Structure formats: structure tokens, C-alpha cells
Image 1 (tube, rainbow, N blue to C red):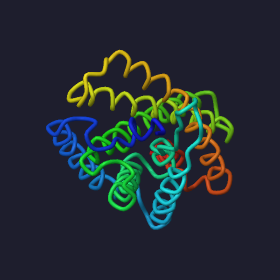
Image 2: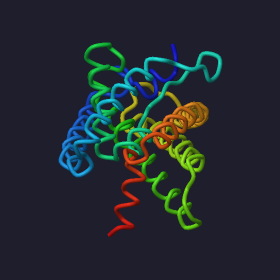
Image 3: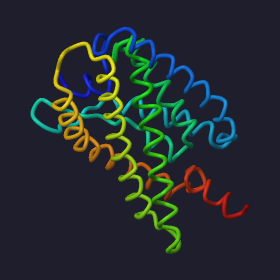
Image 4: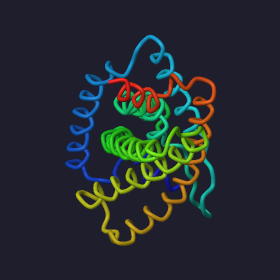
Length: 232
């Protein structure tokens, strides 16, 4: 079995019922909060892009790329969505993808939906976007950021977002893991494999963000946000 189905797309029974309920509630609150904030990120031009981003992430997540023997990864999409359409809208895009996958394609357990949303739509998006904002702000101090530089920023944001999402699983397993597996072994394996998965995630994110930035930079949320701050 590809490891990301155990780690990122958690199945039923990986953590106990109380832990699933706790993170289910966390996911509901987080999604509701993002829904209330997303209206500030969207306008007539960007609503269609949000739909396209969700559809793209859904499609690309169905394609796995090999990492190690017996281990494969797929796009999580948190940093990609946040950079293109904003962190709150991006989190909603990932959450919608995860719900559809769980309910219609049995990709990730229904009882694990809260933990999956927490890891990929909340932690992954927040970590990836925060990294992108910090790196982009630092790069702008030296002048305009070329498209290639934006690609490097997107790569690093996706890499860090992937690792942080994996560490979310480690936390959840530490709280209510259903087996007695060593936490040291789980942490080491999760960090190592998802650092490699993050490289693939970063490459896909960088290529996609650069493609959009070259053709329609006005639609890239990270760039629009910076222009708005400068204008203010």
C-alpha cells in the first residue's frame, strides 16, 4: 500500500474514536472560519480560478509518483492553493477535495475526515502560505521578484507545508494512535518520507505557480496581496 494513504489520507482506525471526534470538531470550526474569511479573498475574477484550483488538485491527487520502494506520494496542494487563491479559500478548496474523495471514492476514511482536513487543509495550507509570505517579503526587499524566484518560493513553501502536514499526523497519533508503534519510529519515517514527497510537491507547485504568474499575474493571490499592501 502506498504510504501516503496511511499518513496523509488517513483511513479509519488509525487513531481512536475520541481523537477522531476531537479533530473532527477542530476541522468543522476551521472550515467555518475559513468560509467566513474567504469572501474577502474572492471577487468576480478569482471565483472561477478557485474552482479550477480545486478541480486541478483533485485530479492531480489521483496520480501518485514513486518516492522509495513501496512508498509513493501525491500532490497535497495546500501551498499551491494558498498562493493562487489565498489561504482561507485555499483551505476550503482542499477541504472540499477531501470530502469528495472520502465520500465518493473511499480515499481516506470517513471517520478520519476531520484529521485529514486538519492536516492537509489547515496545517498544510497555513504552513505553506506563511512560508511563502515570509520568503516573498524577504525577496522583495532586494527588488522585484522574477517569475523564477516566485517558483523557488513556491517550491520551498510546498516542501515545508508537506512536512508540517505530516507532523500533524504524528501529533494525532501521539494523542490517540490505535496501535503501540514507537513514536520515534513513526516520527522519523513520516519526516523522512514526506521530505522526499515534499520535493515532488514542490516541483509541481513551482511549475504551476510560474505558469499562472507568466500568463495572468493579476490572478495570483500572493502577488495581488503584496500590491494591495504597497498601495495602502
